[in-house]
Length: 266
Image (cartoon, rainbow, N blue to C red; front, side, top):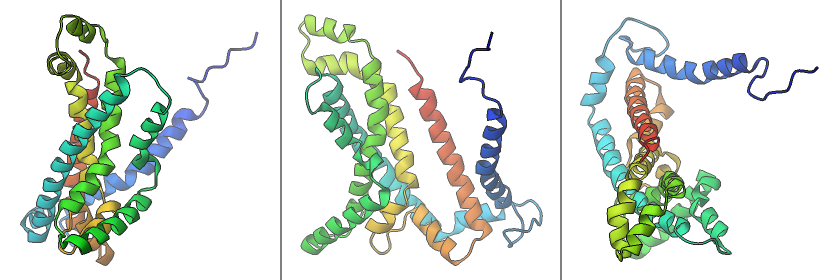
């Protein structure tokens, strides 16, 4: 009798996966190691040192770009999460109807359209607005990051709403609670972990964004990723390795927290 086929056990799958992970993470591991290099040459190990972390912390341009990133990312994440929460409620707390699938696609459009297309479109629109208004502040970057981050916040919030038991909400409505009271006292406490997870995911996406920022920003509005890109066009220095290592650590911490929170149940 032939052995039944199982997709869970494939010959060579483990070794192939390990090889792919090795190719993916070896460059990242190399970058982290050389961030602690005492020498000035990127590819030559000259001893352990924290000098490049100290140099990055004392660089005024890096500090300025970091503060700008930490200003844009939380604001964009808060607005995107609020919009995503309202969109998720509107698309899940309703009976299916024609056009609902189109709304799903419309909300998630930034995920499906190449980022460079979104960046060019925003550049054209914002350029006209700058001409009409004369304003060239950070509002454009915040608006662009918000629009791009909405689907990233929307997905975990919608997923949570679709798995929530409606019994408590219906019971509150049967007891004559107004819709806002039902949301505040029942829906929101159950939905809070997904909202926080969506916020953190949107925050990381905004913090790491390069393409849209590079097209939308005005002169003197470099974020940390675009500043690093500009420096790497000139030369790769251990200072850039140090900044990348800190950035990597921050992103890993936030994404790990996102997964922990997103797995939290009632």
